Length: 170
Image (cartoon, rainbow, N blue to C red; front, side, top):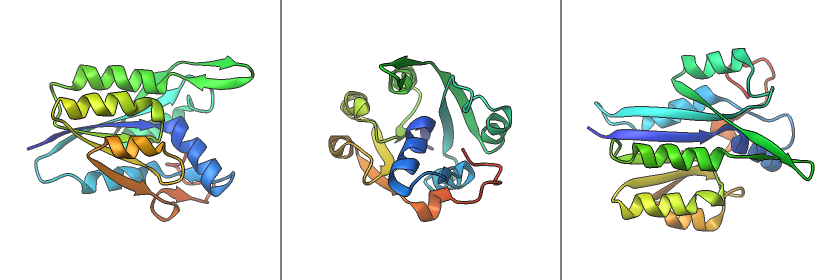
């Protein structure tokens, strides 16, 4: 039995959707959870954290309820504005949480293309952990892929939806 720790950078995925597929494309988190459940072998346990900014568009109660209902644990992370750009602390919070979880999990799946996570991925690998990066091919830092044990490329067909009324979108 494996214990799998998942960290989903919600804002980074949303940004990737906008960059790669144009505005209006949104993430269907129920599809993402379905993909995560496919990596489980019978008896495996998954803890899936969804890192949300402390901004209004992430604090939507309906969105948080949907995330929780489909199996994600919402984790709020602070953000700040610097030179008119929103900066997040998601990678810092994800790193701290992963280091705190290192003794309790065998496999780590990081759903983000953020290059700031490279030192974390390398550290987890040096500790003998399996680390997968799930991201969009065009959006992720190349060295992030090279640092991981495995890579799972996300794409529009299995993650993004165009409908605006889907209850599991962000």
